Image 1 (cartoon, rainbow, N blue to C red):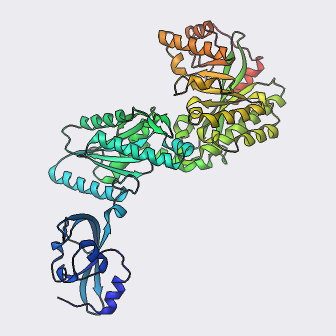
Image 2 (cartoon, rainbow, N blue to C red):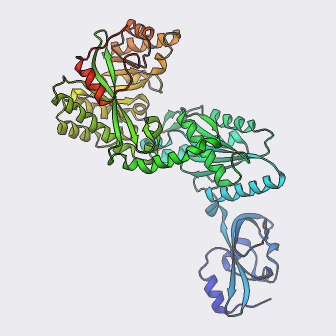
Image 3 (cartoon, helix red, strand yellow):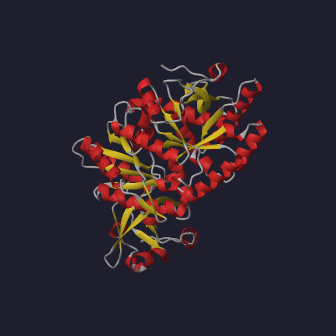
Length: 540
């Protein structure tokens, strides 16, 4: 057994507070530190002089620098999972080669501290091992990229403690859904990845994805309130959607975002041919920050027609992005990017000011005042200084507050009802109009509706699109209209596209309508043409 000089021993061991072993080039133990003895239960004489594989299993040592999850065999015959790092050392004093083996607690290096699932680093290691095995056996496996819908909203409104509780509950549900035979890891935030092995057909991956989605159909109890949190899942299959880990993860991630874009609470399969559009997405992300300063954002305006006078007395402002390379981009393609990056706040502030500036221009040009409605994102509505910002914009642009209408979805209001009521009342004090957008699609309670200081309910277009063929949509529209009028609230029907739909919403006393039957969203030039016609429209 070779000896180490004391200076070399101190140089290595005095800086290490985890279990460490030094071996010669034949992997025979030369020395160990006290941390290893405490960890393993051995005495130094029971370790030194023996091959290292007497104490460690689960490795094939074939390179100078190496790392992996291994099993430490302790003196009492128990076994402990450890993260092992091996480094080659060349001793200048003895001109001999050595290796130092550092053992670190697996939970620290390999597991996510909150969920105790494998973390990103360990998952990548396991995924590469799965790929190597699949290559050797000419096999296949699938990867599920799982993201919680609306997690950021829960974190922002209820706090990080509630967010952590949700992640723990979500982990348990996913584990129960996929079983112990599949690898589940947390990639960070609210993203989870699952590797499905031993699949007989590609369709089996969809079966497991449906099981995960179903597991989230039951509400979560957070701060004594029930919340429905769904999942969006992307699926990639080896080797068809990629032959290395990075590509498989990237393609599954892209598929997951397509699932979100199509309405969430669903899964999508990776479609490699669609990734040709990845460059456009990169351009979008990189250039969105410059869109405001480069004057690339535009407002279009869709008329809202007052019934039965057929007068256009209000518009809804809808944002567009005139991208120099990609052309005109609709909000559904870039607003999710804005929400992910936090740019939704400066963009929302721009929309607020720009809408008021346009109203100011129209009035200065001699047109009669019209009301303009803008949509508030969740992030905007939750800002502590929202009322102050709205007040400043109104004063700066010299717009009568009654000409501004703020649209908020019912889901935003229901996440913190008491705070929502307080914020709405403060906004109403300014004199602005308040409307609930997409009414009928969320989880609102009618018990709270009477407490919201609102002026208008906008019936979601999903009720209007088939109102001429679906008796249930007629009944729901009638019920919403009657309820709103009993509360002295106006009703807007969105998405009216033909004369039959218009006749039905008229018969059920909707106050305003909006949709392609009257007009698609208009640029500023066409808005002025509307205003020049004394706000009248012609109906069939």
